[in-house]
Image (tube, rainbow, N blue to C red; front, side, top):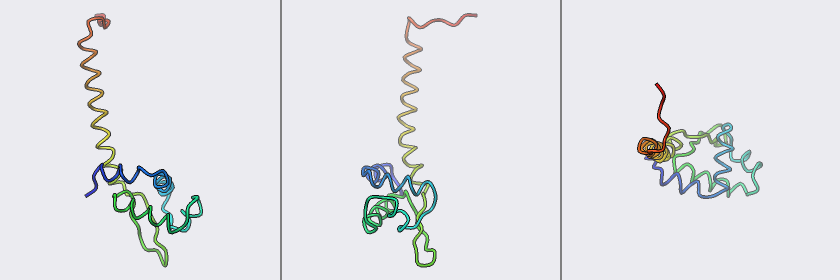
Length: 108
């Protein structure tokens, strides 16, 4: 099961964030990703393993290559976590506006 904690841990590395952004553009094999990044192919494979373990990417065998694509379930776990803060912030703002005696009153 993908949790926001594993997703946040995986995204803590700037290279992994770059890999995820590239995979989000379109499905790509390791070789293409490595050609677009300033790290070795084995390093890209390591980063992809972490992203896969976090539920952020999936892979499919296509001939002799493994093609990686974004896994929206991992993104959904992160969004659900962040939405909680957004919802709490909006609720706090609404309470503050309702309780502020200096707030302008609505005209009939």
